[in-house]
Amino acid sequence: MRNAIAHGRFTYQEKLSWPLPPFFFMSNESFEILDSLNFLTARLISCYLGIECWRKEWEEVNEDLMPPDKLLERFLINVAEFPELNCVSINEPNQYHITWTTIFKHYVSNPKKFKIDKLEIALKSLFMNCTVNESNAGDLFNISVILSDSKDEEIQNTAIKNIDLIIQNRWYAWSNKRDIYSYLEKMNVSPIWYLNYLKQ
Image 1: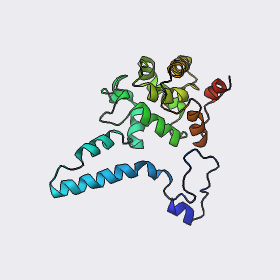
Image 2: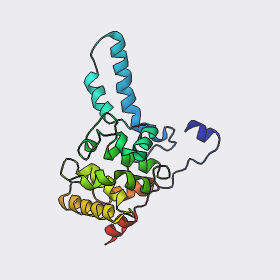
Image 3: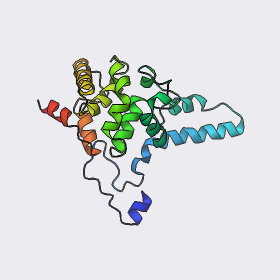
């Protein structure tokens, strides 16, 4: 981010969401990992000193870390290479850190790299076999909003059913059902079906 500013690259953000970022936002997306870095540093110092401090906190943070781009790409190319991932384990922290949440975050941060057609081909069997319940609804809601624009009718219908069920039960993790659209619009991802759904 510092180099982008120093070399005069475009750093202005046209769309913002609450809470607003600092006026001169030097850290870009890195604010998302600052807590993780704090706990990692504390754990490293503890290990160096031979004490057990910060182990629990680090283990909790470690569960939510994003998988590397290359690992997710490998997964999307060949799901069979990851037999441990199924419609149950993809809802929970796992050894690969590949969950509905991390897939959603990777897609939103780089929709040109992780295209929707790649997602729908790779995730079809996992997505179609997932049963929505209160504990996994927040994650499934986010990925369903993305997949509601799928060209595959089966995936699109499942995504729409998920969205209807989750909204009906108010199981989404956002403060209201419009917030996800505002967030996606800010990230330059516009879910067409979901926008029409909100308008109706």
